[in-house]
Image: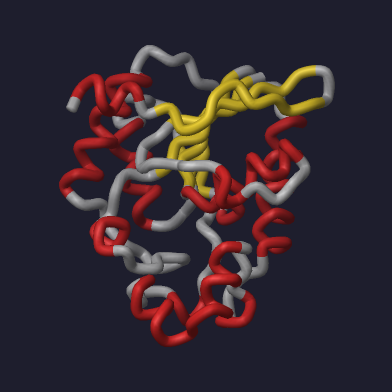
Length: 199
């Protein structure tokens, strides 16, 4: 079985360096273009099931990428970005100036519990739950539109080690996992060739 993970297209907050978390943010024009290019790239992929985070930027991306599909998109809250709590909507540079070194440590460790958000372990737990459910399914090829932090958490679960900041996950990049013999394997990470080929 194969799981294809797609990060949402660029948002205005991505471009401006603003914490998004669970805020609903729309795609920028660049993000819409990225989603359209990704749709063209994936149009011949045979998919048995499509999941998406329920946040606006992923719903919008999924709607564009899979607009040619008749299959329903299943919105799953376990695929949401990490909840950054009170930092949502705040510029990253402003948070650095306001909170200093503790903030940088929390951000590097993917732990926003000090800001009424989620801890790294909470993110790992809900993404692990999603992986376990997918592994039990009978489908052969599944796609999921989600977020950078969520994809990093999924990779951390597969590798069984906290590697959040070790992976680059670009907007509309594709990460592919394969499941066989009761184990997940990483086939590719952060594939953006389709974007640069067409831009």
